[in-house]
Length: 105
Image 1 (cartoon, helix red, strand yellow):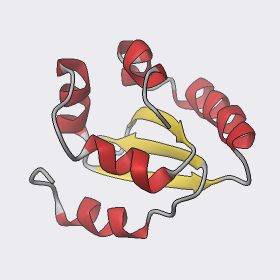
Image 2: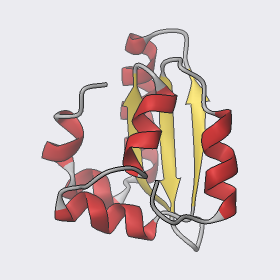
Image 3: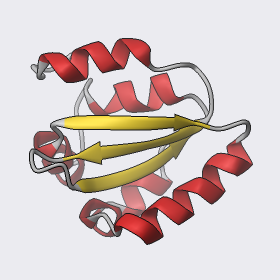
Image 4: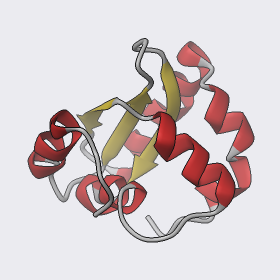
């Protein structure tokens, strides 16, 4: 795992292997990225491990906190993700459109 703040490290331990959405925040508390996952733990961990495309690396460098919402199904996660993106209009969802749609979860 790359160096990260203790809050993120602790929150990573709380992530379940369940479907849901995650919201990445910057230092000001602005939502900068929203995503969905079949398994939240696996997907969110992937941001903080390994090598990334330069655009994803930029996103990771700006993450200071994240929250997550567990859903009852992948379909519910997809619907929630659309609503959250519409509500927050996160800058990295526009920049990472291709990268996010290609992840395995």
